[in-house]
Length: 140
Image (cartoon, rainbow, N blue to C red):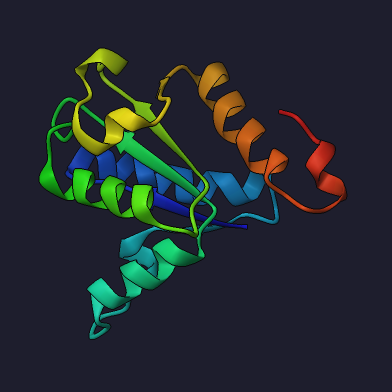
């Protein structure tokens, strides 16, 4: 299962990097996309992002106080909103951001305020339920 991890800014990038490494360790069938790792130097990055957005069935947005109004984050959310590939988006809110703080395309998706147990349930629970395999009965 392909999972798109969206970030913007240094804190969000670090969080996204941790998710990129953590997700496959808890759910082995997850194939996360994280642009610093998955877009090579010289690639046409916009084409790669567009293609990947179409391939993914889950998007995770790392939202922080420094990026929740960032145009690029909202561009990606809008692209996902209009995409036929991604079925679910989970904005994960860090640093005191509340769902009521979110506007624009990200506001269309049910978000999760970061707490380790709640977030791992939101992410871990959503991924397995999207699988079409025996693992689809696993709930974290």
